[in-house]
Length: 227
Length: 227
DNA sequence: GTCTATAACGTGATAGAC
DNA sequence: GTCTATCACGTTATAGAC
View 1: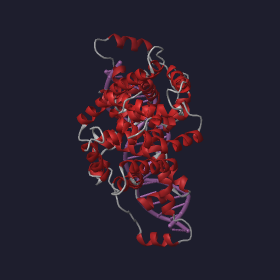
View 2: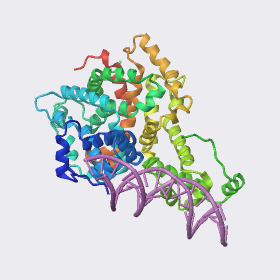
View 3: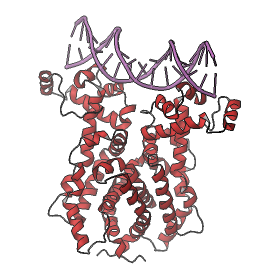
View 4: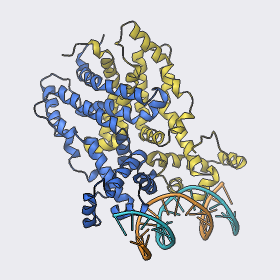
């Protein structure tokens, strides 16, 4: 059903002309609006009318440029998914940095991304849940973690008894859970235990330093005596 | 718009009679089907026709018993939300148990719950995001954490220098992130880094022991020398 | 390229027979 | 209580004028 597209251009000539116009093109306006609405409400709850209104254009134009709601969604989904795993691949595969440095870099850049775009994780995870097939089409995710330099270093450290033997997926879950989950749970936390948006973001800024520290403590935990 | 109801009974007499019939009542069948469909797909993507089919009954009956899709949803939402915070209140407020024991109990019971009903967190968080107002109507959540015995014990431990001073919300985020996030991210992890459902559940079973250990390590981390 | 008007369709809800 | 048939409406998509 859902089918990723690379770059759908209904009227190539017109599109190129539009791109040359002085300010932002209509196509870009629609794409940006779609990104906002889809990411906030999800595919099923999003209305093409809302997207058109958000873009400040007519509803018919949406179909003129992107043929269908689904096609437009696939574009946004792909972008958001790319954002979601953006940087991970690069950071996990830095040859020269240590395990600890990689974690620091990953956490910091992720928290900065999610501070700007806090709705991405919930969107991506919800839509993947709704339609797992969209993932099958994406390549590279399967081996992203398993064949990374990070993983190689981790296994090596375990072999050299510098780390306790533990399934590496636990490390990944911990890292993601500590970093991403607060943003996913923010709508709940904001009404339950945190005062306002500002306080939340301040806490997340703190976590840039805290999470790497905690990750270290966790990775070495089984060999440490706890007071 | 969304408005929680306590117990909507269109035809009280008929309902009571149905409850006396030998096997499961139609009302219960619909409610169960609604729970399955809504929790899996979310409010917007769920179709009343799918719910009726899942229940093995006619579409008209759904409206006969529950008047509208929204009313039915509120029921499921309330149930799921209760599940989501179920046990937390009790466990956080046990007077006699230590901080460590509370964490152990909480993690274990939560992982068991989510093993049976893995879709609850993503459902609850997505629907709260879609309509934060539904939370405002719920009472007790605001002070659930802040005024708990857990919190009192935590603050006391900090005062006695047994724990480093840190915002207690970090502890809550860590606990939830480590425990709940794997279930939220499961649809992604299952295609990316984990083989199958069985392996996933085995990992989650391990985490019942691991998370309390990690939580200890994290809580004491700032005072521990990291090798 | 952009608009208005409208078609085509899916979905929630109901009327009415049994 | 349960069903079939149908309505009413919102939403996506398109035709056609400009």
